[in-house]
Length: 406
Image (cartoon, rainbow, N blue to C red; front, side, top):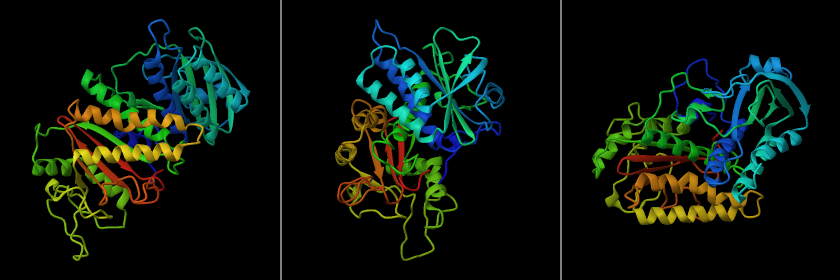
């Protein structure tokens, strides 16, 4: 399954927006977004962030010189809200040298350990896709700026390090991600902005985990985080109705089932009988908590099973331990706890609140494992397996599928 930027970010895109797939170039943008957030968070009262990364990815073609870069939209606008820079010249350089220039601009001040590591992994992500590089001189730089462009086939990645100032910070950050410049970008209220930011951080963390976990797919974790209209303590029937009304339930069938199993024509239908009457499963049916924790196991075609909060949290810890174990020895292995915190821990705290009020369903086996095998390893080659966590006001939905995602 190949996801475009728009589909992966869950946006309805206009025709004039890029239809680039979520592949290696998006790794670069994901690293840059999370690195910007960590630069802000790790700054101190006396030491402001040294810069801000602005990344754009375009289908350009042609040589790395100023004319084609302007024509395909990498310059002069560096982001939807500014700044704008007119390129004067492009000086060809080695890919390693261009990466070094970017890293030196980011880490102008002594960095924290996680910043140093993530900037290094950003460089590796660029190396994975870049064929050629150039440093761009601009006419109207504001202070010390670095602008590097990297060619990846017909695509060009622009990585700019500019002033930490960030205009337009009341907009959905996903609407300016990697050249994904939504035409309609209404200002968001604080709660909606925080929700959009938390979701994109989780998306980026799941994407970055590809390297230390040695995952095959660029999009092993599909992450959604959204508000809902359920009552504070919903009954099972209410949650089931809400679940079937979401795009999440329908999209799972469209993206992962293909022809492997029949899919209901109407996802909101309360009953579904597949072609084979011997297996009367409903792949959209949320299991009854009264049935126990995944008592009957799970296989393709069954609906997600209910997990009690203690069983679920124990499995989250076991999954995190498996990730740490399998990344041990990798150069980026020490980043894994930070990335898991962005992908799982922070969204769970946000959804459940300080009291951890969670309703959980997952494509779990009889041991409550949903992203691990019976041996305790990451389930790299199984079917796409869902996790749905419903809190008092918001819900988290994650699908993990390594080999088949883009």
